[in-house]
Length: 266
Image (cartoon, rainbow, N blue to C red):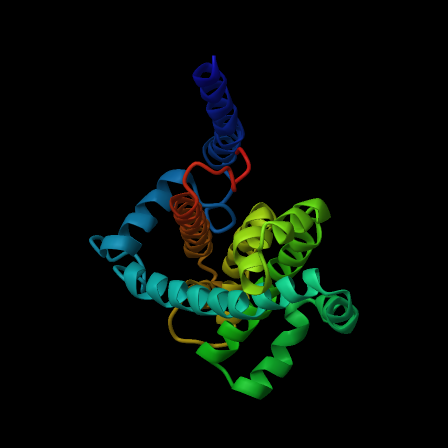
């Protein structure tokens, strides 16, 4: 019964992509929308293959998939890891101690209201045009979901659980690592997934600053050339890389917590 339900859910998950693909084909081949506005699926598939292999030499970016993808992946990973380094400990402290919450929460929520594009000018002044600016923007954007979900998760750990653990002898760091963190794991890991997803969104913003390599840089150059096909190809690649990185994060989480449902059912 459970397998049948899972199969039905998988089919439903394919329904919307199928509808969108049908609408895309209809617009391109039946309504004949110009290719410079909306390239057809076949044109995108050929362009993507050329971007990956360089076999057809259809564009200036033929065969450069690995170079640009690797640059974007590096920036996402560096920014995301920085967000974890600051967001996790600060979230744990804020969720555990009311005085720390009163100190940090107002400032964090104030900064959170400034959109990423608002940080771009000052980031370019601080770090210049290039890799560091992109990493800063990614880290800043990913920090907030990591911090907020961690703080909420720790704050929602039942007081009775903490009291019972103290009665059994858990104190200090042992109480944090063996009681509070596992109890808040679902919320913490949800924040990590949100942060990773936002990192992929902000890598494009960071790479629009003039870096020479990266999928965002390719999109910026393609925009100036009016190359809609290459812009859509980069959008598809970013979506796929983001999805793969999310699946890898989930796999690592499940490996670290076997037998415990720390990832909600999808």
